Length: 477
Length: 138
Image (cartoon, rainbow over all chains, first blue to last red; front, side, top):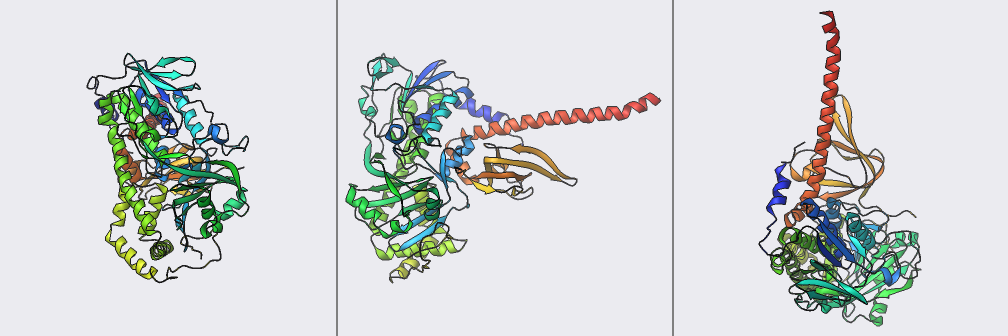
């Protein structure tokens, strides 16, 4: 066994602090408030306490979260599809954060892409369940006491175990007193801190209630639609299996939609323009959905239309104030929890090693946000491209044909990798774009598009119905 | 109701990594137990048992050497594969991630040192026992 040099850790810990360079550093006994106990707030608290302890900096962290994630329905939910990406599951495992069985509703091992012409199953490159479907709260409204744990509740508990103090008080605004941020609480005296981290998502009004020295919070959002269906576990296993089902249907105003199996429920997530009941009805009646939706699935009363962030603020920080997670910068359309982890950890490292001034955040936190924003710009281009071409039958047939052929053989799975990464959030949009520019991909795509011009020329095999137990590359008419 | 565990399911006795093979990933136990074995000319030497949350195979992330031990499932186990590329890319963005892994490796070195001290003490005691009859005969 090779022994790591003892100096490696010490060098890392001692080289990074730059005390005094920014003027606002945390001192022993510093008080930090985290507003919001979702993944971003919990990750920020957990890593801040962890890193501060590593450099012998005693701090106290108060997390303000009035919701109880043990409640079912909206009272304990953060309104999200609830997918933990492949790359995040791996990185969290390396961090020592393991998602227990009680939190994982289902391990996802494949994606099924549905188009009007047919469907194709794309297997995980390593043939194992590395994507987790979870409930952010304690499941759909009316579900009662559930025998599982909420993902957000689990992370919040982890931060509390690390030493964060959980405050159930509501925060109604933020003021500045003698240069320090002060949280406002309804009917109570405000509390002053050395740093406030806002981790309140985009469905909260709080970032707009910051008075003076505020960050430039011009977040742009769009609305999504989420609904839960109930069915027995056996039926879900037989119809959807351990696959996430993604739909690229030619339905006006629909960007894409997904069905996510979770224990005794199926979560439907729809993304598009002006989502309304006729759009949802048209989607549910489409052949792809009818093929794989459990026959007796009952829509629950739990549905919502939350906002999602599509462009973060230009400056998600100020002196003694930082925005993390969705109210700051997040990834476009996918892996929001992964972005919460990345931004929260970058902010925590900045606070401990570089201080809490706007300058410290600009030089050390903002680059992590900017990298996500730059990648999102590529993502917007790619989704725009897909939106334009998915209405063309020959394009859909070409993509389907290429993927089916790739899944039948073990090598050269370029289209499969592009679709896998596009929907799982396992790779950056930049990486996906680079993969599509490879000459072998372009040649393969052109060849399959040429064959796709002929209707029915998608080389698919009729199997008599989508079956969750089917092999990779299986397609149905 | 049985809930899901992430990773790949391994049956009792199945070999997850084999000593001497080239590795390109590390593994994290999600559920169940695995045992770490060193294969020698005299047979298998049991090195450790690992449970949920423990990881193994991490040396292949940092060096291009073959696996130094065999890891086998002990009962049904779920083990998550962490790709070398995914991990190194993230470490490049966030070097502090390596500290978590180094802390575990550091703990293991501490345990190995303690084991070495115990083994040497046992060897010294054994030598002393075999030498003492000779001293008595002089």
